[in-house]
Amino acid sequence: VELFAHREPDYTFADVVRLLGISESALQAAIAVGDISTEPNDRGQERIPWEEVAILAFEEWTPRIVDAALSTRADEIIPYLNQHRVIKVSLPIYLIRLMDHLAREESAKHHVPRNASDVIERILHDFATAQDAGTLDLEVRGFAQALAYPFFTPPHVGVGRRHCRYCGIAIKTALLEVCGACQARHEPKEHMDEYGLPELDQ
Ligand SMILES: [Zn+2]
Image: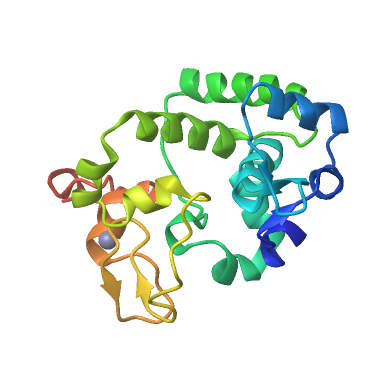
C-alpha cells in the first residue's frame, strides 16, 4: 500500500526489502538476472526506480492483491484500465481443474497464495504481450498504455464518468458499470434460461 499510495521516484535497496518483504539476496538475484535495473543518482548511490519496484511488487503480490489491498483508494491510485473488476466466466471443468493446479503450483513458489483470477490474468497478460499492441489499441482504446503499466502511468482523466467494464462505452446510469448490450452478451442469467444468445433466449 505504501509503495502505491505514497509513490516515490526511486528507492534504496533497504526500502525495497522492507516494502516488498523479500530478502536482500532475492533482490540482488533479481538485479543480477536483469529482472529489475538500478540507476545511479548524483551522489553515486544505486537507486531502484519506482517502476522497477512496482514490477517486482506485482510478481510478489499479483496486481489483483495490490488492487484489493488499496481497497477503495485503488480508484485514485491505479490507472482506470488497470483496475480490477469481478466478472463471471463459464469454463469446462477440466480447465477449471487446470487453473486450480496452476494456482497451487504458483502459490508454493510465493509467499502470497494465488487463485484462479491470478492464473487467468497471467495467461491473458502473456497473450496480450505477444500481440501487436498498436493494432489492438485501435480496437481497444488505451490498451497499449494499460499494457505498459507500471512503466507508463496515464494522467487521471474521466474521473466521475462511468464506463461499461466490457466495451468502454460511457454509461448514464449512475450505479451500473455494464451497458445493456454487454449485460445480455456477457452476463446472461443462466438460471433464468438466458444464454447470451438472442436465438436461444426466446
Ligand atoms: Zn458494454
